[in-house]
Image 1 (tube, rainbow, N blue to C red):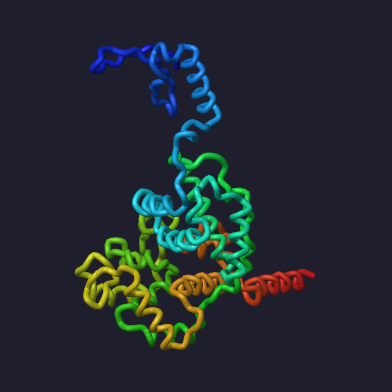
Image 2 (cartoon, helix red, strand yellow):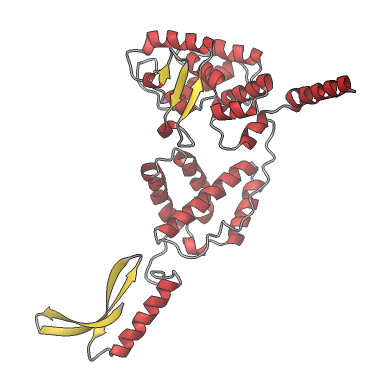
Length: 352
């Protein structure tokens, strides 16, 4: 860092300017302060000290950066999440940001404060929106502020950091009974029936299924490999196949085995998501199944797995849960836990 004189050549000849030199994030910066004679070296030195202070306080660039509005920055944030991070949740964020934009769109990021975010929470709840949805929207907003700060589009503390998330009080996880499963399977068209069965018997997510290739299915050893790029956790996972599902997939291979992907549309193309979902929704409607989503199939696998085996750790690994607390939602007090305490009680009675 320092002050130095630099000669700039123009039509009138050479003119001396005072320059200051400093380092920001390991990058050397030069900045002109003014002409020698119009600006003294002492003024240039003062300018340098101010830059050094801004760098030390992490406020460098705040005075010259134009802070964008939420409306002006949200698309850039979505593109970053979709194209750079390759995060599939960008579609959910797009929906969240559409609601956030209605409330904060015209405000600069620096104008959004904690009080306004709390008011947003209250408004969304009063509109009948579920707490879990509001929490996802605030989580999206928090990530947006963090990324804006890293990109020098925002300075200061993240206003969402001090907000307490709402208690979600989620209702009991919806699972299918065996009768409902049969109803759904019978109402599914041929092209999605094997997808639904595989989801119920493995707990795989929709995108994991639709992106599944035959190169990741080992029918001899009855094992599916979910690549890290297709996994929500971004970690590779292995899912064992039951004898019944292995037979189902062997039949499927006779239909699509000459293609890369396991499941294909009726026209022989790759699924984009909506094709499968439209057919699934119609099947649920025709079977008179209420409150059933594709994710219900995953819940059904988790619930049956814990209830029939009691092995929470194994079920959690198959589902790819990072925390067993997530798997615990499938523990039913009326069966697994009650059976456990009854067995303990029987043992104690024998010993006494």
